[in-house]
Image (cartoon, rainbow, N blue to C red):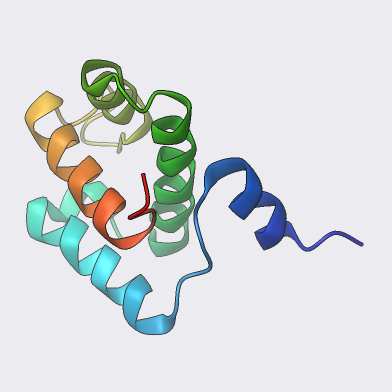
Length: 102
């Protein structure tokens, strides 16, 4: 059986987060806007890992990265995303904590 984390690491470049990294990621997102995580920690972690995969696929296109992040990071209060400014901040937190090599 294939380890799902190893598969995600190879596809998205994201590594398994320690407890402190996980908390730092969630704290970073909540510092931007608590509605980004909206009490769905596991979903936020999953979105962060997926965001790393998108960054890996479009490393030299910050506009596309921000647009895709805005589309990916939605919530009931923001069904169309949180806007490009917050998307850029979400990208920065994700890049710093989950996939710093991209």
